[in-house]
Length: 79
Image (tube, rainbow, N blue to C red; front, side, top):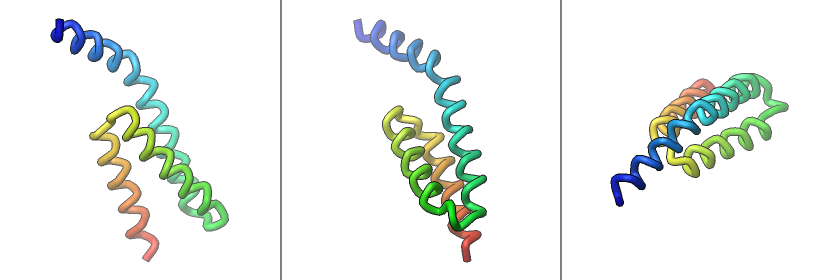
């Protein structure tokens, strides 16, 4: 019974992955576009927070790490 539950969860996850990847890539583009303009700093902060929440909600560990690295690189470039 447990094997079937894991299989069902895997199948559902595989169906969602293309949508999740599209959403993540869209947010990364928004972050890259808004980080250049200080007038859009609030939008950048909101987008970054929503993206991290999304990764946490859908348990996207690898993507969470990638997003964290992107945000870290953006922060380093501010100096």
